[in-house]
Figure 1: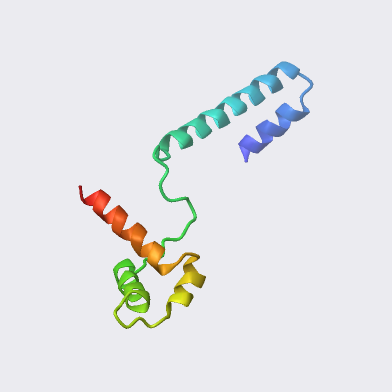
Figure 2: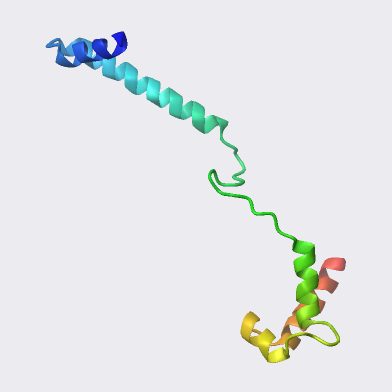
Amino acid sequence: MQFLEEILTLLLDDDDDRGRKFFSTVAMEFHRMETEQSSHQSKHGGSSIGRQHIPRNRVGDNEQLMRDYFAEDPLFPPHKFRRRSRMNRDLFLCILNTTTTLFKK
């Protein structure tokens, strides 16, 4: 409570010098606090603060995709693949085979 009374006294005081010193000190303290906070943040980026991590079954999803579109007897016909992925299934397989051979080297 004494701190608030000091602030009010400085604000209402006619002596501008004391008020300027006070506000200068407060501004420097805020700057120090902001600098300190930013130095504690991760340098590489990473997850955003406030974002929720949702665990996914990536392996299972990949297997489901392969069963749905690329199995010997796929669940969906080729025109469904074309509509959902916006490319021909044969073109996709050609890109897949080319990149697979490039990255195996």
